[in-house]
Image 1 (cartoon, rainbow, N blue to C red):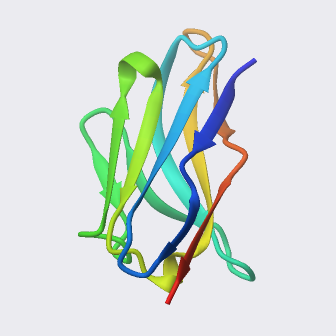
Image 2 (image 1 turned 180 degrees about the horizontal axis):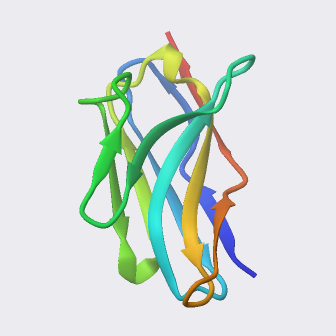
Length: 119
């Protein structure tokens, strides 16, 4: 069974930084894209950043402040968040497209980690 475990959330003041980590474990053959989503109260879940084989996406709302990276050897993805703003407050979710067999893949979600930015 595949699991994604997140860590690194917390509370910071505006202008501060946090680093989120997400590690996948279980029966994994390979991982395709990995990414971070967030959901603020009363809002839809939105894609913040994703990283695949040779491609990276970062949402305009966080471009220049957030950086996504991954460590394939550890099946992990990271989100470095700098210059945080109150509007970045949300629950952040890790997502990964994981192959458990040569042709069998599924999207998996982490449990979510709260990020709170105070003004």
